[in-house]
Image (cartoon, rainbow, N blue to C red; front, top):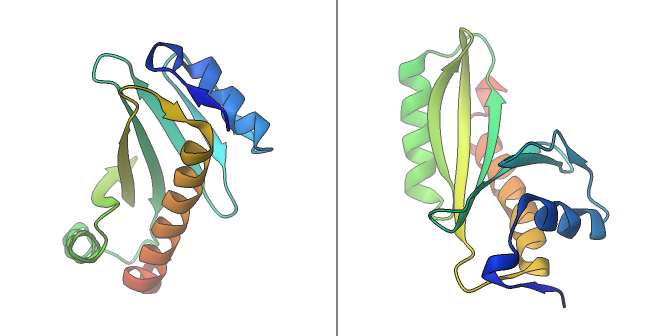
Length: 137
């Protein structure tokens, strides 16, 4: 089982973890990259100063939802799902939902756990969207 020491965690080593797991990595930048999942893409961002990874998924809702309704639905998700956090955001005039999860890598990281957590994060997000945002997908 591949392990990364805290000082080995970098964008390159993280990308290598996903590539080794046969997952498609997209748009690699200095501090982030995207992982293509079964249904959605997850952005993986590295914060070296605070020693955490931020997983995020941005999903555009249909045009017939207001920001107030989206915020209420996001709050319901946040009450029921303890692993992920939903936020209602506007992006270029479209109502979206931002799903986030923070994962520390202080004292190191196990590659299998990282890959599994990204897959679980995507599944939790899909489940929450279907349960609370079904009318707006």
